[in-house]
Length: 147
Ligand code: FAD
Image 1 (cartoon, rainbow, N blue to C red):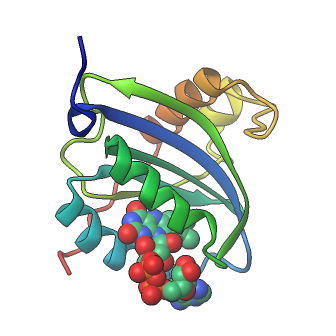
Image 2 (image 1 turned 180 degrees about the vertical axis):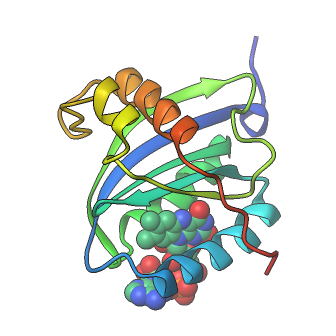
């Protein structure tokens, strides 16, 4: 049986390295744009930043997630963008956030204890997804005011 493509939802997780310092100004600018655009596109997710890395989980209609990722991948504010995980989903994990922000602190003793050798570029996708969920649990999601 054929499923209309617009009803297929996916979750994408990527990692990247910040091209420069991860300043509040840069994050605020990314978040403001992301929240306005994602809300319009029915995209939800979380952006984790810190320690020179970005992790981002993007959920939504497949074609919209793919289109957004193509734009994000060429954004000069980061580099070495690598998809770690991509899956079709029945339910969203971050449905309440058009884009939440979490500051990653891998210096957090709990995180260090659980993941002493955390290297997103060499781990398997599902493993990193799991680790990101742990990092999120240790972090503090931040919602900026709507644009
Ligand atoms: P425009 O806004 O017209 O920008 C044109 C080009 O300049 C694009 O290539 C853009 O990448 C780049 N650019 C824009 N602003 C700056 C800047 N201040 N410094 C350097 N280059 C810049 N967008 C979303 O809509 N949703 C998201 O969830 C999202 N997450 C992001 C996560 C990260 C880590 C980064 C770095 C960016 C994210 N963005 C997100 C922004 C995204 O990459 C695009 O900039 C945005 O979607 C606008 O695209 P546009 O085609 O309208 O380009």
